[in-house]
Length: 149
Image (tube, rainbow, N blue to C red; front, top):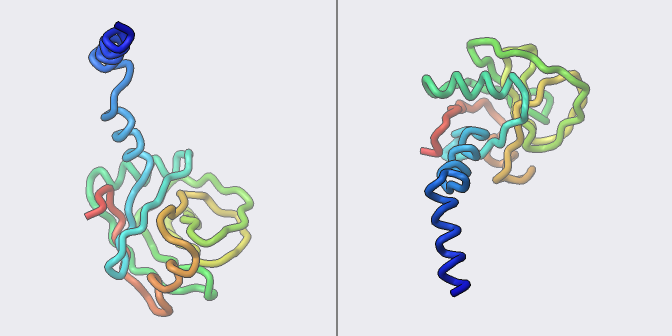
């Protein structure tokens, strides 16, 4: 009896839209983008600010390709080709931080630095050593996308 009641209750929740698996997955998908670089896919979970929201809106229209070069042996940086809103704050970066610099430069950190930056997000599926190996010592071409393909 209890089992039937519970089943009926869950069905009501699903059909009423109160509880939806697709709502959770689409919400999670809307808060991330993918960075394709050197045959790898980096998963970037977005910060909650107007900068990352604007980037996600841009990516809805088309992927963004960026030529990135090494800077200071702690980051890869490249021009987005457009500007995003800035939400600068004093940040001490750690490996995996994805940062907007000067409103139009996209930066992936594989080591530490401190400065006035705008946080875009954080790479969740790679550690510092893996990032160093993936990004390499030379320039790289990165593709930002809403798809992991």
